Length: 184
Image (cartoon, rainbow, N blue to C red; front, top):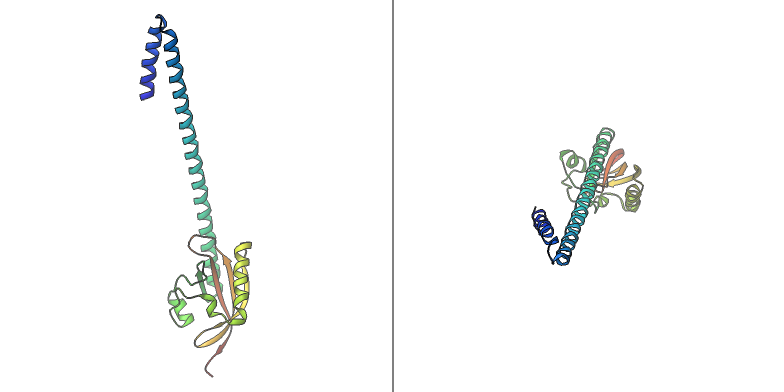
């Protein structure tokens, strides 16, 4: 609005000055004003394009997150029906949640525990490698391991899928294969 009013005043002065000896000075003022108006319009156009691109990126990111959440919840449902337990691990492979089902399976509160510490020494590195492979390939991986719990050693099949979400690194489905009590 201000540049429009200024342009109008300068144009009015230019028309009046055209008939006077200050025609050259009025022409220079008009050119300077035109240059400022053009630069302002150019800056505004750049700003609007950047805003539009940022909105497009945000919309694509939101769509990707919605898709990931859909895939994540679908895997949780499928793994939940096939496995005794599904745990979500963070970037450090620590258990993120501990509900009643999880506590019942492990026999203790495990939220924040390092999940590979529950796996036997012989299988621990193999599990970490499978988690890495699952994260890189974005495919479901499966690995047989022995879980060493306080009350028993369980031979289980772990189903691992990388989630690539902000909150978690992977989901692990635990399916018992064989149970060996420690106290016999």
